[in-house]
Amino acid sequence: DTAVSQTPKYLVTQMGNDKSIKCEQNLGHDTMYWYKQDSKKFLKIMFSYNNKELIINETVPNRFSPKSPDKAHLNLHINSLELGDSAVYFCASSQDIGTSQETQYFGPGTRLLVL
Amino acid sequence: QQQVKQSPQSLIVQKGGISIINCAYENTAFDYFPWYQQFPGKGPALLIAIRPDVSEKKEGRFTISFNKSAKQFSLHIMDSQPGDSATYFCAASMEGETSGSRLTFGEGTQLTVNP
Image (cartoon, rainbow over the protein chains, first blue to last red):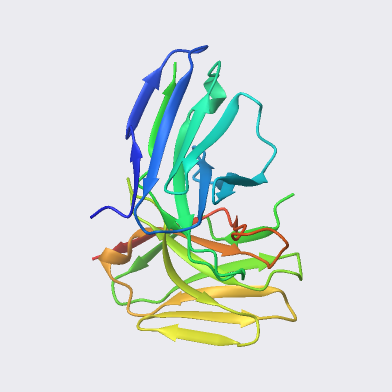
């Protein structure tokens, strides 16, 4: 059983296109996140949702729009893709225990290549 | 502004040796310091974590040493094995008013353990 799953695993597309990445967790967690890992493997948080409500919105271009239809799903839609968007995008989830000690469980990642 | 600095960027160790990865943080409000391990093609996974009220935590071959006054913490891998070859990320988080934890990651260390 996959705890945090993402689709697609690979995404190759042209500049200017619009694409979506889907994430689902079956852990019953309240909070979900999107991270971007660049070519140097640096991990940076983009968004987090708690019970479908946007909690963290880091400095991310407006072309990126997260959507949470329910607390088990957090999708990422990207408009007008640019070369610099090429990266690995990770979804993660955690149980809201009210402290900073929540363990985040990461998905396998979506490798996006913009040509 | 990089709030968590990690070194070295890469590390090569012989099987059976000790691997040491260091991290330094700036924000004294951080109160939870996890280490994540990432294998190629996979998402990061929690390895071990520590709170600043203890100076050391050991789990099997993995030990975190924490120096609150110096704002530094390190991961020691004893008897390093080829299967430990991965990228290791230190991270830090703090309690806040929002739900979920906001992890700030270090830059990552690529560890290679030679047989």
